[in-house]
Image 1 (spheres, helix red, strand yellow):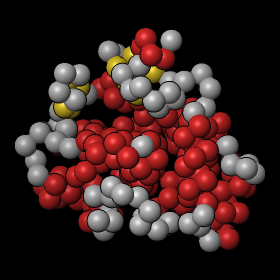
Image 2: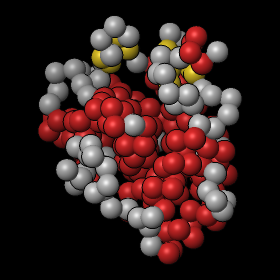
Image 3: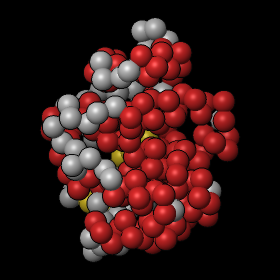
Length: 212
């Protein structure tokens, strides 16, 4: 059924299409591939945290992937043109950050016991060196899938660290402020970050130091 309903051919990559959220029934192999790549870049303490949260070997597809449904539901609350791939946000990363703020907020408010599973992989990704990823610049996020799913996952997990900062700055109020201020396609990258700075200065600062 995946090929019949999904917009993305890669099995197990969650996404929203035609007002529906599409997720795989079984975890995709790319979750294991991602942790295999990440673990080699982590110090001993990071590897220990990874296995403590997700098992040994880590089963990210079982502990983390289901949480992404909240992210995909958030995508139903903004415009998306399937013909062009454009949203009403000025950049893909800004659109995905919106969905990640909503995801972090939902888990925080309704499933707080899942926060360790949500946050550990994101924080470990943030701490690990970025050099292995061929596409790193925020404005090139849309090109990351061309290199395979792992590079795209890297972007999403790092954006979840930023999302946490924005949610912590004001909860649902910050989410609404972000959505209302950034649904303008004409904004430049610098203008996006300055707008975020008005909502969550520490998030804007982290974005300014995103790897290039």
